[in-house]
Figure 1 (cartoon, rainbow, N blue to C red):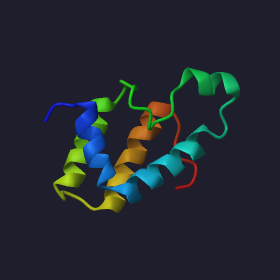
Figure 2: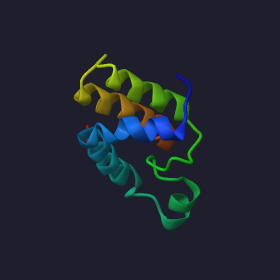
Figure 3: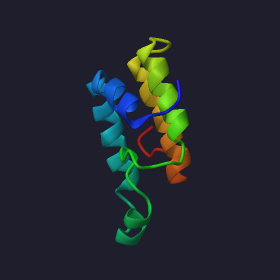
Figure 4: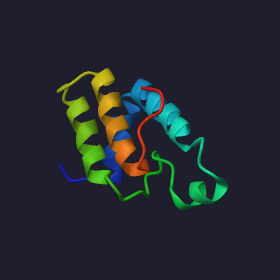
Length: 92
């Protein structure tokens, strides 16, 4: 399936626990950024972000298809976030 904002929103709404954890991890990634860097890099959950968009969407689709657990989805999303932010997740 090709990415669409509407499709992503529909799938994400069905997995609130995953979304909540991803949002929390996003805060952890961004906490050490200074104000300038926070302005330059959009939060992970912003749907206007293009970088890694298709990869993220494919993960949500795989989660929806029950190809892996919610825990595994969170770990896979965290790996994408590490690419996006250019740093390792500090709470692993």
